Picture 1 (cartoon, rainbow, N blue to C red):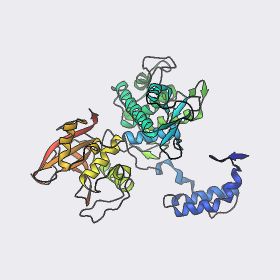
Picture 2 (cartoon, rainbow, N blue to C red):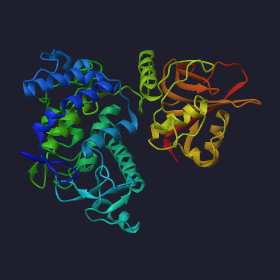
Picture 3 (cartoon, rainbow, N blue to C red):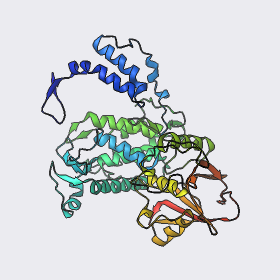
Picture 4 (cartoon, helix red, strand yellow):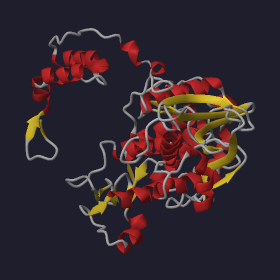
Length: 450
């Protein structure tokens, strides 16, 4: 069977070309440090596919035990967005030649969508008022579409939190519900009308809250602590509620079945299976103990800024993820402001607003926020807030609050342009531990934009 090669007019026989290009493929795996661990697996796949010996004819398949794939993940909007992006356009949203505009495409059911599942018809007035096309093949500025997506995700987070407010769902459970809402709409919890059920409406006689209360026991059903991702799909909350919807215009879509199963796995285990990441508490809930702090610091150091704790420039390294690199972050690496700006931007999934007025030194951040009114603020420590200290005649300090426990505050920080201090716990009174010249200004609450 001949298959069309994307973005060309050529048709090729997949099997023949797959084999003939095998040596090049293996060479690329061998030379790429991120793919080297997969080289032996690929050699085995080639052997099974062709019968030819590529150096591996036997493979211990126990390496695929789900318990071994415990990649440290994150939380917050960035991870949720990455998860949604996978289902909406796993191969990347189509863009024009220079990558500045998304191209409007068919969602598979005849509806125009753009970017990562942004429904043109649902936002028709916005597109028309901005002068953008709304037809298939039309091109729309990426920032315009991305801003709509961000607002839609944030809006769905708030709606899911409001509907489930009495259930005390975890953040990863909220993420599973937001994925449902982004896909089929938030819905009306009092409606059984198919056009209004959405994520939380009435299915089989119960809305989501009623189904949760009837079928779910958080203490026994939640498997996050066990780190078990291979789960059955026989639980009644899944079979009677979260396994639906799987149809579009009356047609059962395999992609929706896969998505509902993935959302259920996330809801029950905290595992983002399509990303290979576990939830770690880096998001809204924050870390609450030393073990979580250790895991989060390891994730930051190995995945985000590629460094290790050091002072006086003895170990800097990199490269840095986008929130700590140009063009988003123009600050000097390993200054306290550089770290805090990047960490806040990562959590918000957009640049921290101070870039528009000048970042200032660490001791000025609290006053800058008060002056410009970006976020609520106060003297009570909260997870995912910024904390600022003044120092008489000096620059002061700013850090990021990763979590709040009964006996202290977990902060992540850098400083002086030459030190990464990692995550440490300070007293609940906010004493930074550097002497009386450092005076606590207060906390900037990133979860409470004004």
